[in-house]
Length: 68
Image 1 (cartoon, rainbow, N blue to C red):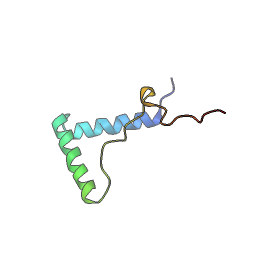
Image 2 (image 1 turned 180 degrees about the horizontal axis):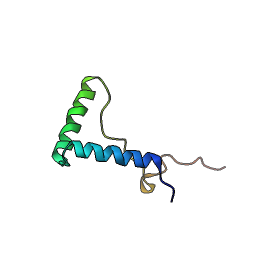
Image 3 (image 1 turned 90 degrees about the vertical axis):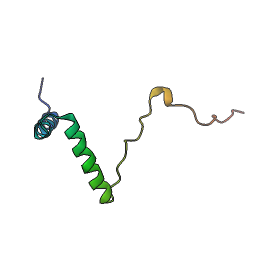
């Protein structure tokens, strides 16, 4: 299988970051919180991603036109 360069880079960056934090999950999240607050202070929008629509959430929101 051909190696995906983007995923390889993502895995490398993730591994480097985890190593910098000593593989400590609490430290990783502490740094994430600090960075989030920095972004907010700079006026960047920070929030959860928009919810994804699932097949069950796709509903008809209005009635189709009546045939004459």
